[in-house]
Amino acid sequence: MIFSRKTKEGFDLILKNKNYYDEQSQTQFSPGIYELYLGNELLQSETMDFQTHLYRFGEMEEYLKEVGFPTITAYPSFQKEIAVDDQCEMFLFECGV
Image 1: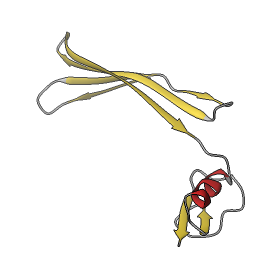
Image 2: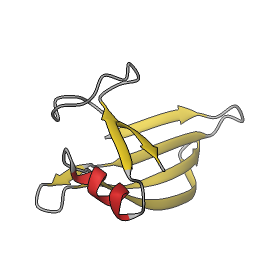
Image 3: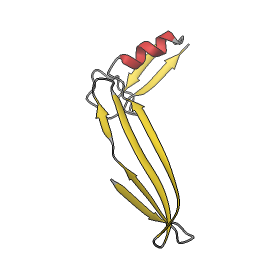
């Protein structure tokens, strides 16, 4: 994927990246490169490599217990209805001591 933005100074900032997911490690890999151009001239480039671990339903609660939270509630949204499965886009955790 390529994303491009013109800065207020007139430079072109371009991000080139390709995301992929490894099911075995549950990791989303997002390697990419930022490039700064003035016209056709490449002024600067910087590589990046974001890695995001995607937790399975129930996995994060175990880690939160390990670090000392005795009370943990998972919600699938800010509506605070208790999560019962992984059929949502995100989880919100409320932890108490």
